[in-house]
Every structure is written in C-alpha cells, then in structure tokens.
Amino acid sequence: MRKVISVVSGKGGVGKTATTSNLALALQEMGEKVIAIDCDIAGSNLALHLDLHPNPERSLQSALEGTKNAIEAITLHSTGLMVMPSRHAIKDEIMDYEKFKKILDRLDGIVLIDAPPGLNENLHTIIDLSDEVIVVTNPEIPAVADAIKIVEVVKKKKGNIENCWCVLAKANEVKHQLNEGEIEMALEIPIVSKIPYDKDLKRSIFERVPVIRYNPYSLSAIEYRKLAAWLINQNYEPPKYASIARFLGKIRGR
Image (cartoon, rainbow, N blue to C red; front, side, top):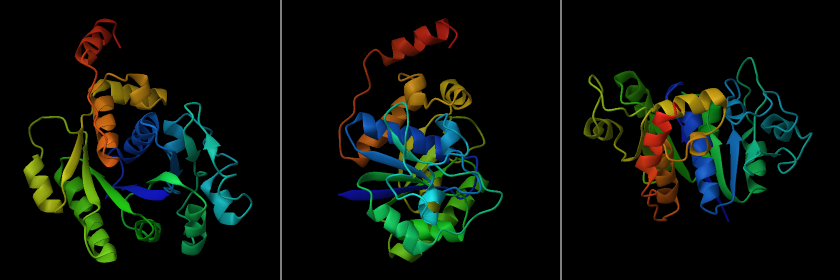
C-alpha cells in the first residue's frame, strides 16, 4: 500500500521543509515506512535540513532522467529515513507527469513530498498524484493570502478539499497575527497542527538536525509528533516529564 502526502505552501520561508523533515521522522518513529522526496527543484533544501550532500548522485533528477531507477535514487539517512533528494538547479525543471508517476508507482508506504512553494507546473503534477495535501502557512496576511491560492488549486483538481489540511507554522502567540478562526475561515480547511517557532527549532535548522532529534522534548518536536499521530490515526501522549526536560535544557543553555 502507498499513500502520497504532499507538503505545500503558497510562498517560501513558511516552514514547509522543516515540516516535511520532522513529520517524516516522526512517522518513522511511529513504525511507518516513509520516503521523503524533495520536489522543490529550484530551491531544494531537504538535503540541507538533513545534513546530506547538497548535490547528491542519488536524486529525483537521476530517476526522472533514467540513470537510476526509483529505488536506486533513494539515499538512506543516518536516522534510517529514506530520502530522495534533489540536485540544486538554477531554475525549475519541469517534471514529466508520466515519469514522476512511474517513480511513485515503484514506492510503497507513506511518500512525503516536499513540494515547491507557489504555483507552478510541478505543483500541479504533485497535487494530481497526491492522496492528501498539507498546506503549510504562517499566521500572517501575505502567507495566508498565498495559501488560499493553493487551496483553490486543490479544490479545482480534486473536486473537493476533504483531504486537504492546514499546518500553521511559526504559530507564536504574539500581536499583529491572524487568529486560528480567521485563518480557517479564509482557507476553508481545518488547522490540524500549530507548530511554535521555538528556539530549539531555529537551532535545529542551523545544526541540520530535525528538531524531533535535536530536542525531542521541545514544544515544536511534540507538535510534530502529534501531527504524525493524527495522520495515521494513532494516539500520542507527550512524555509527562517533557516540561521538566525543557526547563533543564534552558538551565544548561540549550
């Protein structure tokens, strides 16, 4: 069995790739077979988030070009996560629909796609071939406005938005941000996760270690695990000592 979940955004910089990498690892921790694919060809960052070579020989492009098959194009990360990264490109390369479909047809388990931000031809292909869509946005008017366009594309292509949800990243409770009700009303899809932009998440991106491994007890790591559990209909209860671990981490200066 295979399920394709695309992680999309209306604009760059909202936390899409961090969501992809952490969600992939969280799902793997819960016993799922996961393959993360970087389809953001012009802005490929998934390899950087996972501290992999920025121009890997095993890549999505090598599978599309036919120099490697879908399985050979996968890199095994140190965590055991299977990753199909992208090579850096100066401009977007158009993915052939049939070739990308054949790649997906060779895979099983949960295929998590880090999609390119905004609206382009590759995003249309990705949404066409996805079973579920996660729209990542921030609680700011420009980000939500761009996310609305993505939801409209999903609605047009799928005929409904039943399997389309919102993840609110950088969801710090501060002034001058849209609230949850306003965002859901604008997007017409439910917010299923609110990921705070805590210091551990910032540091984990700098260190190129997903936050659920960098600090498993951080607020953002716990929220990513909750999201993973929700996607596969599992229950997840954060460790009772998580708040104590976070406190001790602050004392140690982490």
